[in-house]
Length: 274
Image (cartoon, helix red, strand yellow):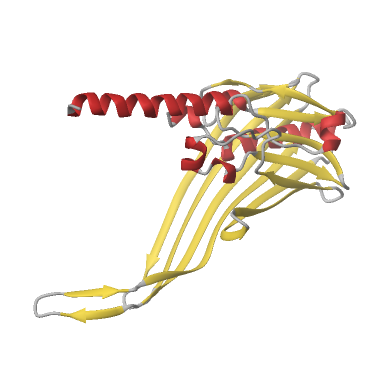
């Protein structure tokens, strides 16, 4: 087979696999609890571009404006010291409103920290050069943290949330996330979701990309009762949110504002990759 025809065939096969993958993923919903299945209502997420983040809208809520803050990074490695550290920090704010007149200003801070020690291997010296075998870096800390403050126009209503991931710390092959949302009196756990409701048969691209280990979204649970959930991909048209029909309006509004933050920060956007 000539090189051009071979390249064309390979491109066609890859394109077909990607098309088949995105088509299959578009039909999948992330796993949610039985409680939310029975008592929840599902909403698709609409989007408009522009500003510091995408303007999401769903149910009776929407992001109206946003403001990107500063981003700063640091790297440090002292001479003759095996210790290396790196960090980055980014800030973002957005306004979230409801059709009933509720308004919230959400302030986000995303930071990542890394610390490692270079371990020496065995060095072989030659006349004009040398080579070191077996050297590696021992990771002391590698974390990703999202902090949020939600200030609403309701009197004395300020909420805080955090989601933290420790890289390298896993249960099986899945990373560990810790998260919660609180106003000081209530604590709502934010639980990561890695499974689909009906995963179906894995195709070639699933196996190549390890999609079964991707974060699919989050479910919000308080006192063993599900309040809602958000799906963060793998394509923008698959952003989905669920709200429990048992929630009061302010609970819906607060977790709804958190949904927008999580979609913006944790989205797995396959549309931009293929």
